[in-house]
Image (cartoon, rainbow, N blue to C red; front, side, top):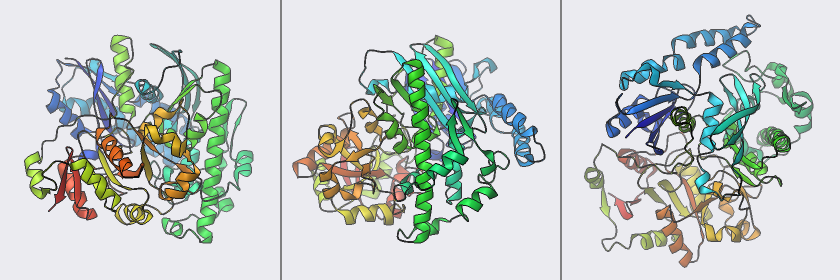
Length: 572
């Protein structure tokens, strides 16, 4: 069997993917091994894991592909910063340090683990890696008779590029639009993330959640003075920003003068405070402008090409609220955003690029879950910490009853999910009707902010009873890629999983996800169609990966029930 490896590293959430023959068989994030959330180091532990599991050698690996082109990225940003060397000296300093680190040493790092011939080390353009990730999920959507795809890649910056639009038809991929640094919608949004006291590349979803509590009072000012879409190009006023001069701060003094002093996370704990309202209004304004820009550009590209099968990828595509607005454009026939559109998922696209280089075609499907074999501790040792709850094996029925009595259940089953959201294999589950239980899970156990609701999970046959949705994008709900509007009955009876703006980031479950599917069938019989599903981790830690993570997290969270391998266990 022949293998192709895809690698993402050195920026955020390092990861590795593996193609065996013509199928994806593995996707691993380095944070799962290091237990450092969002780690950007070279994923040596993930790669070593795959080497041992598949006996990877120079004889069976035909390509190892990095998700961007290091020299192209370095040269573009360096050329930009050198145009004003004194004003941008911090960027210059950062760029020259990269010569001896990061992507430039990719080949060296790979060969330390798998001694591959140099001609097998390939480099995929950054935005191409994102684009080729987005098209891997066609097997989950209904076809509409057209092979043509229109792919949008939106992120902060990669290879010096910030926004790309591609046309794809079978085995051909061509770019029809590109915008370069510093004209970046992604960095525009990360600026307000930085300003509000959140970590860039991690806190953008907090800004999105916060935005629903405010009003976009600054939207007109932002569009008139800071950023807009003019003459078919992104037009950004750099005097409001520092990201083009200083890698340590995104906003300028001018930004501070207009919006006020920076805020800390502690300012956002009291939803009734003046500080909270002011921050919520700023978040709402930036969210509105982000959505406006993406909508305008999408409509322009559809009009220009006539293609109505739309795909989005890149870090900005993790903004599920913006993706939902785009998905509802009338002209769109189908809409897809992958479960991991950011840099971690780009390892999948990098491997797909390598597959195309070698075989002149693309892989067009990938599983949502991958089967990982854990080495330590062994299953029998792991289960020594638990006792079987039901020796009669009526486990799913027992779990359903426990959920409806207010218990929180940990699920640790099979391989981990693709993307940042748990979909049932590494999940914490509770009853969506019991607001007090949901709040305990969200705020006390998970440590999340009070303005961020948890996600409802529901069988597909019940979706339109509780939520407004459209078949052209419903496949994205399998991995919580979009938000949808809740119906009145849902807001009334399941308010704990509905955001203040009436939306929910719902997960639809098919029988492919057997554990959740069976659970929902049983709770439906008992009178409840909706459960809560959130990731099995503290908010500042990676999702649990192996047996030890599972046990340690249960102890720290003081949770006692575990659904593992379709059996219910009680932690000793």
